[in-house]
Length: 199
Image (cartoon, rainbow, N blue to C red):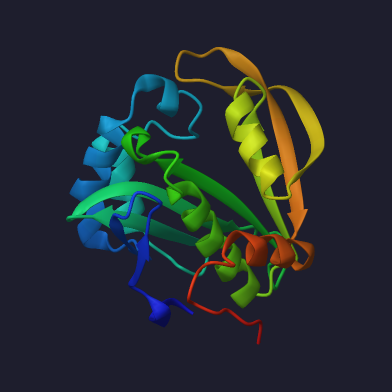
């Protein structure tokens, strides 16, 4: 599954980006990536990603059996982070949660779509049945993006999300059946030269 990496992809702007799994040595570069994000982009993340101890813990406790972080890198600098979190309440896991963060300077160039595509491919490889995305209700652009990828609104949990300032927000839970999503992925990558097949 992960032996297919690293991969080189090309953004709409023509820039070449490397996609690969996170390794322990990425600790400092990943911290620098999150420190570059404006506060509004970090406000609703589940962890304080500006805390070096948080990133150190991620790097030290990497376990691809539970969480697969895929990094986007250009010129040795991380510009995106997509993670697939396997819900382990049942064995084998059948549900995965997708989380996605991109550098603001590289948005509207197809980077987010490419990272999402990689997570979808991993979900297929792992034979997960369903993907889940949890988004704060105020993040209208993010919700719109997930809807465009085929995710549908499942429920809204009142005051479930707490931002970095301790303020409560409603949490929108969106889901997508992986099998149905495959057609969406094919539409998204129809211009790519790479061909993916479910084995």
